[in-house]
Image 1 (cartoon, chains in turn yellow, red):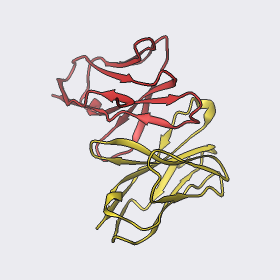
Image 2 (tube, one colour):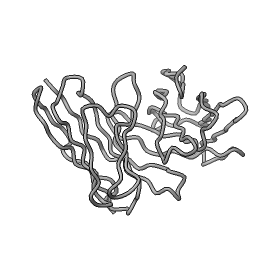
Image 3 (cartoon, one colour):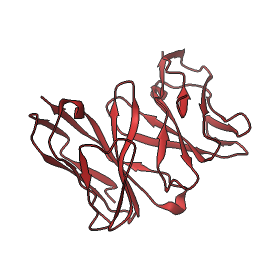
Length: 113
Length: 111
């Protein structure tokens, strides 16, 4: 199993541009989520999904959209990039029966200039 | 008050030392507890879950005190490879798996 994969690994955007961060998992996990990690802030939840067709907001959802059309994929869309969205983005997945132990992808390092 | 608080460190210890990290959480509805490890510029990885009775995995021992809302991680016989940031993580009852992360405690093990 590949586990949780994320693309791209690195991205530089200009203010106002949009883009989609890709996340996929091959473990048939129902739960998937997106976090951002900033220096001194820890990981913060952006959006999450408890299954295909169901998404909800986390702690810091503004400026981001998600959709979950399949169990495997959970893309994160930046609608109009801002410098405040410069961060490292992690996707994670888990199976509820495992006490929600989450498995993380390798991350996407995003810089917005 | 922050939901999950940890001493940021850094903890600088020699190889072979025993080191302990503490963590407090503010919400008594917290249901599941974990320690994750994060290496520099890498993703967090689950180190161990924390159970009410305490649990051990090799050189690592985790304890939970629900009354004091306190979690600990003990590392015995530290190795150079233990150098990392250790994240205390909680999941609240009914939160559908939404984890709350502490900011992490940085450990540096020196030869």
